[in-house]
Image (cartoon, rainbow, N blue to C red; front, side, top):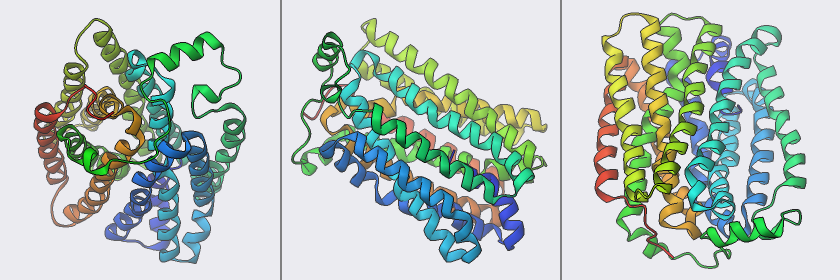
Length: 395
């Protein structure tokens, strides 16, 4: 919720402060500057200290930054850019910390489903943020979005402190038989003391993850950040309609991620190799969006355009059971660090993609924007199928 509110609020904000598309692109990408800084750091920190503390810190940090956004905007553009970057710093540790917690709590046979379920919180948060933002803006003005969403973090934090534990061994309320089940079937036990960087970076499957993550996020982040603008400018929807139509792809993603997770875990339990399952899921996650984005230039009604966007995002969500589950397959002990590494590449795609889109739109068309995404999806498909594996490559 805290991440998508800006993509709606930016429309009234840019009208109030007279920002041009390049400035809007700069503001949208400033979040990623901070987000980039803490990916690997968050992974190292989660794998050594434990995910509970890291995630708790992250949420408090980015909630404060969200609440301070309107004040920063009034002070001036440099302050706003810093506030957005600070928000990114907090959010950067979240995914590595979540990956670390899941690798300790969830047995291999439930991996795809658990990951899809946790990540669908992101999609439903996007839905909630995009649905409520226009309403709040019309009723109370755009600053209200940042104040209300930011304050929700404190509520979450109080529950998290009392209920969450970094690993099953630390949970006093867990039944002994459940604890035994989890610890015998989970691969990552003791916290990491030293990190074998050279070994990690010498493995082709690690690089397959890094490259695929870049290719995947380029398309995803462009849709995340620029979709309301596309609906507004190309399809001529107003602010509320843009928000509502943006909700649709995220809802479908939340559903299809869980469907994909269920399919993947079922295949694994039926004896299909983890490697094959990951490759099948990720190929759908790449070729699906590539196909539907190529269709966008041929459709002539807004309904069909929204349908294409929705199908693109829906097939994209199968990546949760491909690329995103693969970190825990190949290196369960270093899953936080590995996610930090590949997500750094993913975030770079976000930074370049979001900024490049602003540039392409000033000199070209939306078709050019989608063409770049399609090419990267195809590259990702080839790399992931050639070099990835579902087997453990790092002890």
